[in-house]
Amino acid sequence: MTETTASSGGRPNLPMQGVPQPRRDEVLNLPRVHISSHPVMAHKLTALRDKNTQPPEFYRLVKEIGALLAYEATASLALEQSPIETPMGPMAGERLAGGIGVTPVLRAGLGLAEGFREVIPDVQVWHLGLRRDEQTLQAMEYYNQLPHKVDLQVCYAVDPMLATGGSAIDAINVLKRRGIPRLCYVGIIAAPYGLLKLSQTHPDIEIYIGALDESLNDVGYILPGLGDAGDRQFGTF
Ligand code: PRP
Ligand code: URA
Image (cartoon, rainbow, N blue to C red; front, side, top):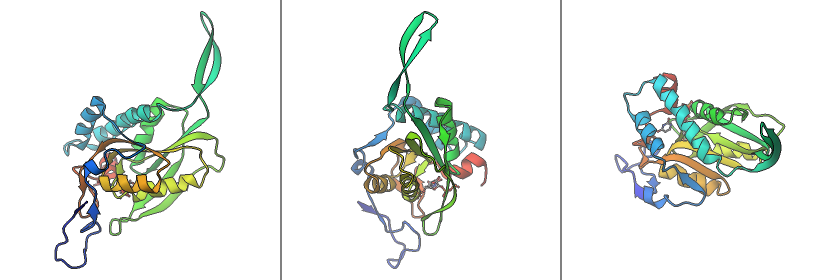
């Protein structure tokens, strides 16, 4: 673990100042963590991170990356038999067994959820509003539109940025209380600190990310990262 520096040697006045962080290579091989190695992902991530990329293109890229991550994260879904007739005759087809849920963590998860819907149009979308307090970095729930009836085989919590891990951990806590049989987290960019925290707190979930970055700065932003994913999608600078 490396330590971020405290300015005066006294009590840190920035939330991540002086907090020990794991190095990238220390979290590369965590169980159940999948880091995309697809060249198209790397290509799109570079365009997404570029500070000159404007909100309309940024949002489009988040959706496209969401579709790529959806393709990777759904690779192990269960299938059931579905006999059909093709124009040539009968065939033992297959279809996805059980419902699939996507929980966008508002706001920034909205673009990712749209990408999932392009791959699987009949996903259920369970909106969950969490806002990170920028002083304490604690996530606070402000909106919850999750149905009471659960008929899913899996639910994906989607949020572009896994920084300290607080929002992701809270989102999974909320979904666990619904009794969904299988939960996954899907993000675009993770910091080693948040990835380790999420993996240790919820060792039973699969985690899919597009890239693993280097560290968090003193105020909890990912380096090199992409800045504020919500503001860049919705133009609220
Ligand atoms: C961002 C991001 C995550 C969270 C990550 O959201 O989309 O939800 O911060 O940080 P953490 O891992 O330290 O919790 P934010 O709270 O800024 O809200 P927004 O989506 O409305 O911009
Ligand atoms: N939220 C963001 O949008 N970006 C970061 O780097 C960290 C949290």
